[in-house]
Image 1 (cartoon, rainbow, N blue to C red):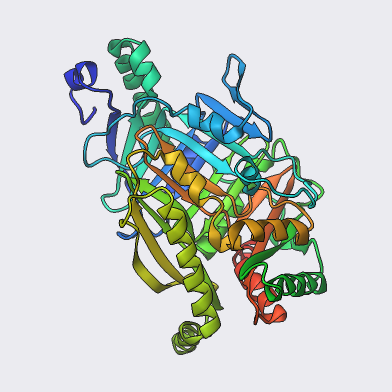
Image 2: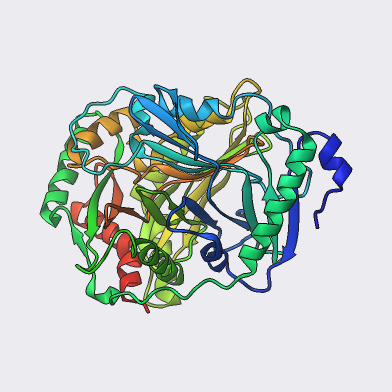
Length: 494
């Protein structure tokens, strides 16, 4: 049943118990729907492309054994039995859950074996920096929310296999008998195998999505005026570049019920979005009060075996009408001095951020100004990597890079002050990050862009553009609309 022998789990160093199965062609989304419940937190981290360059695993799970929720000034851990106060600092509360020895996985296994799955809202940065409070905080969404999972499923897109993984936290290995953990693991792996082998129920009949639409929260002229205001700060020498965004709201039909319909709407929208625009850092994370439905193309940071890398995106053009037109637009993008200068500036920012926590001399740009194409846009992408210092933790790495430079600007702190002034509402999860932090110290976090935030029966989609001195405000607005097109198209797709 398991890849590891019974004596190995019972007497060896702490390690996961794994059941490996053939997948038989099911998508990660189908498998997720087999185990997701509207009454429990759940997640799907979906590497839809399954390329060698990126992680070729998708991960999914449901019903964490506890949930950490952090708002400014407090963090609480909720289990089935109680709610426990953890810290007056949300990020520190999450960090404390990973204090102590790590679980070293056997070789050849997926990078995530169990741990924390969730999101950091953009405004978590207020735990790290002193920022003004000017924008309206209109969505009741925590600064961070993470489910703690000891049972996860990894979908290997290369071998067409499933790995069901039972890996409790180190404190259970230290405090309970191995025999008890082993028997629990066998029972839960068997139960999960049954659940995953079942066919998900058909998605419920929903009112026609083409009757729904995204409505802008501010006018085009209002956004253009804010771009010009931002350029005034650039002209005065405050900043070199900043990311300025605006938001759309999706209102479901009047018949929508947030209790019975929410899960069906979320899953159907994710299905449509993946059909229109599969992306390497897609996913769906469901909590009681908020769900994130993402087709993000951008990684904030990955850490694997103490090797860290970040993958900034800066520079965008719409897709062409045909291959020839596509290539013309790409050539124009790569030759554009404004775009090249902006990209280089942001790559340097990420190098500096990594350099704060990586070994001296280890930070390098190992891919520079590559082109990545998605359904509606082409991007310039680079990859920056380094080796984490021996005295630095995974949480030091997150703090050094969060939030990403591509969605704030240069210099980062002054840009965040200006964003707070110019954007009318707080960003919430938008331009924050979601992903995993494992018991083994590995992590992989995206940047929350091209993401619908579902909260209180409505969807919120935010899009932005990088503003520099010679930006054309109208063209920057059009770029934001291009970035939103996949979601607009998803409503019309059947």
